[in-house]
Image (cartoon, rainbow, N blue to C red; front, side, top):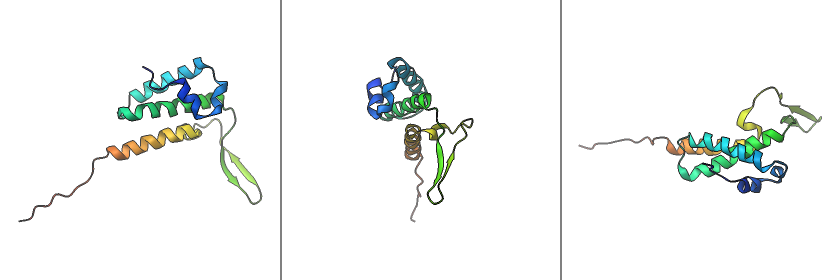
Amino acid sequence: MLLTSIERIRMLSDEFTSITDERLTMYIEDASLEVSSLSAPEIYQERLTRYLAAHLAILSITKDQAVIREKVDVIERQYSDPSKNIGLFATRFGQEYQRILDELEEQLKPKKSINLVVL
């Protein structure tokens, strides 16, 4: 079962216009499988799938190294090593996916409480 659609992925950015429907469907299938294995509430599953599929799609078309540091005075730019995997932080869509997961984890943590008995 696909948890998002090609149209919703394309609405995120114009970058997706160069990716075929077949390839986007494959990324949606992969992301749907991943997200359905999580214990995320159903209302978050479409968003998680959309951002993870977008992340996978952008990785497939991005050949450049990511800028990991930039200095303004005496101009300096440092690029990531393309052989190193920086995971979800490699794209803004992966970062949003991780942010949502972190938010869900925080919400699902058991709340600490103090039980007082007054005698």
